[in-house]
Image 1 (cartoon, rainbow over the protein chains, first blue to last red):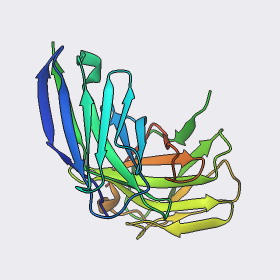
Image 2 (image 1 turned 45 degrees about the horizontal axis):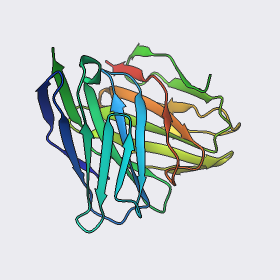
Image 3 (image 1 turned 60 degrees about the vertical axis):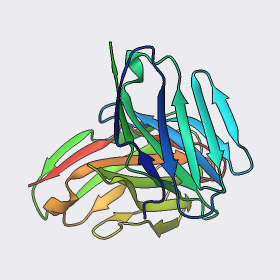
Amino acid sequence: SQQGEEDPQALSIQEGENATMNCSYKTSINNLQWYRQNSGRGLVHLILIRSNEREKHSGRLRVTLDTSKKSSSLLITASRAADTASYFCATAARDYKLSFGAGTTVTVRA
Amino acid sequence: EAQVTQNPRYLITVTGKKLTVTCSQNMNHEYMSWYRQDPGLGLRQIYYSMNVEVTDKGDVPEGYKVSRKEKRNFPLILESPSPNQTSLYFCASSLQGGVNTEAFFGQGTRLTVV
């Protein structure tokens, strides 16, 4: 079953701008993870945030988690052409299974 | 280099002809899984394995089989492929499933069943 749902489905921004995408989920989680996928290739792990954490940073990435609202956001600052990709959130519950959303497609225009 | 290797990368086959997609990881991970990716549906889990000889169904297991005889390998078997199994398939491995560990993905296998 699809646990996470990303919003928006697609996003187009100018190079240098920030990109924000959101993820909502339905049930309690152990952690939430964000992955990037470049056109038709394998997913690459970006960041993991535990259920007891509220914010996490990694380079130009900032992830927030609000367990009361069952939502997370991924912010990419100062975007580059190489950030053009699809971004997926994945939730992990106690059953060790990762459940993915349908993804947000980000296009960074030069 | 830590990696998950899938083969083949591309495959076109005919309905009913048995096929196997191989997956191998070199990280000594316990947890491995197979996903299929279809437009607008994201990734859906087909089967997963928590260790050698331990496998279980994911969300969309119908028409698929798996085995885990060795820790490093987790092949996906389609006994009688049908056109609705045309999809992009990914194998993934992680140290302990989704519990506070990241998943490593293979490069994908694009399967077309005609």
